[in-house]
Image 1 (tube, rainbow, N blue to C red):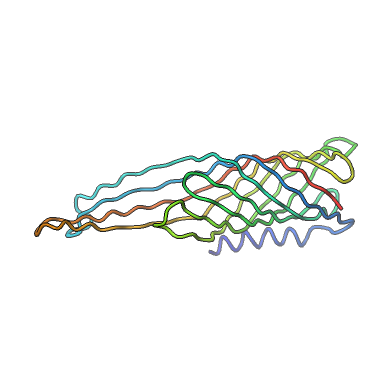
Image 2 (spheres, rainbow, N blue to C red):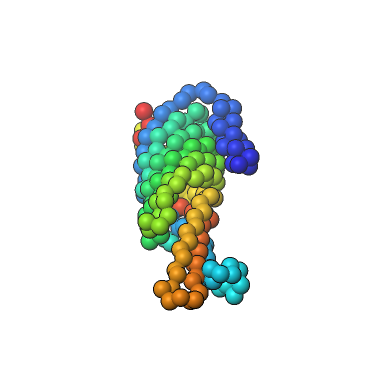
Length: 210
């Protein structure tokens, strides 16, 4: 928890310390692809002697599906911007809804200032809804960063292509016990665990300044 607090505090401190000259507010949206990396295990053991002759099967899965986002923020000046993003992603294992706070530093590529490279940090909350009734939904801390290229179409419109990495913090487990009806038969307990380790996004967005 201490590490998570430090990461979130660092993002907020960067936002607050950024110089505030001519601020331009913006709203926008985007679409892209998100890759989620899952890991898990299934352990079966005898109820009369847990741990004895138990069997564990480990698994991993990578899910690729679309991600949709809406965002709003402010350009503090030509080199600094802060914004909040809502994103939605669904795959075969879970649905995710994220609320993120981000800061980017922009570097102009050329004298016209139409093309900018950006790099920044992100922290926020991710709501994970597993695609099973055996595990409940939960809110989890996420953090990471992003980079990409932004192109100014005109004074009001801009578009960008970006890559974002998010470190996830989702873990879930469930267990069930089966007792055979025959007297003297040995029952078994099955424990299943799953974790969402990280997500990677490649997105294209369009923003409107006002």
